[in-house]
Length: 143
Image (cartoon, rainbow, N blue to C red):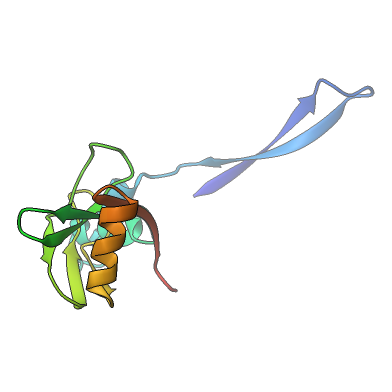
């Protein structure tokens, strides 16, 4: 990738001053970059490389719904848009680690969350959140 250095005049100053603006050139989107990496490293499919490129950071939501009929909680991962992509719901009825599957287009394929006090969580969701608790998660990949 090459970078062009471009002086831009500041029209608000007298005498004229300039700001240096650095403009990237010859950039590639993730799909084309993944194809190029695959060409040099054929052990990795273009889809796997694209997932790795997207996996640095992702912000998503986790939802816990109360299912009053079956007396359990339903956990799922959601994208950041209301009514958007949703991972499959996981029924939770006791303490323990729960593995939530990601949704289409997410770099997170699965996420394991611990449930340490099921009874208190269920009561909190029912009494304080009207049966639905949604929280934002920022998932970061350590380098």
